[in-house]
Length: 517
Image (cartoon, rainbow, N blue to C red; front, side, top):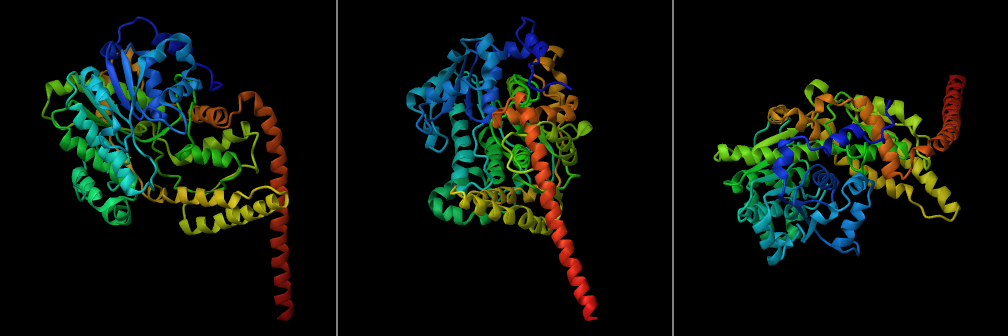
């Protein structure tokens, strides 16, 4: 078993040789405009583009945040371990990144006239990755970011005199009202167009629009999937004449290989479950273990974005009247990942690399009945939460457990639709694209989901979560194992007391009844 956080030196050495690569040649001296560059996928895309290609410039849409200027935010980004290798081999790469001050919440993305003209004159490739990924985002807000910004960017792209490719990052679950998704459009599932929905939202205003969320979303389970589906409709009908395609990734999770194995910078989705269980907080999971876990490594997503742009630039010239190509990206059906595989590998590896800040012995009870789940969270979350908060109160500390559990339960509740329904996908376009690459480009820009060893991948992901989210290096594992042993003894003791008490109560009740009889 590999250590997981070691660099894949052979692959990196290959990346920086002078061997011929069609994809590298396509990006040579070109300018890219990226939205969503400060997000999880955006950062990986920036790092890979700067490290693996000689792109002239990456313009990124970015805004000041939390008291930091855009330049300060970029400086902080480049100090992340994700960029360590890039900073080592290409110390001037930072100069190829140019901020464009803007905000997807604002009309025309909040871009100044001067910056708009720069983009119009210079950009050959657009990568639209900006989105709000919160499932329960207020509808008016989600429409502004996920739909209106997409339409505004399409109109801006139509003015770009050098444009060769536009990649719109959607989601494999954008059309989740359909349980088998082909690489086609599902506009018939919508009750209106993107343009008309935005016009109605403008007329109604935020409060009225948000109050009518259920009516507008229809069969869509949340505002995220509804607005992502609307954005796809905008690409299809407003993107006519553009060299444009749609990339639909599954649930994006830590890096598979590069530039650092297991890198992650957020605790969304599966990683939040993983960290919650490892921390000893999350103890009951509502999951159907036989369902497909449609996870995709973030570095493979960045690679497919780069390759799909190059392919779009070539194929749209040949067939300009065809609908924009869609690339679904989920685990290969010949190497399918089930939630049960995810659970079993984590059960095996978690005790070998626990956290040093666990609050309780980590364990998880998996159920597929919502009614049973609600009973168990009362027993394993709510009641222990009140007990823990009471102890904190006695120690003069701030109570936090019930508030935290309330947040966890609200977040997990929005996933019920995806737990209760099974989704399958075709990936014909994606597989065809990969097999059309030269062997060099298949290696340099790998997105072959068939080749993933899921057993090894989750081992590396666990190490990555410890290091990048828990700030715990591998040398802390011995100390964490000692804590794990102590918490195990405490956990078994509590179980003995509780189960013993229940047994005694039942025995006493039985004897009383028997005595009465």
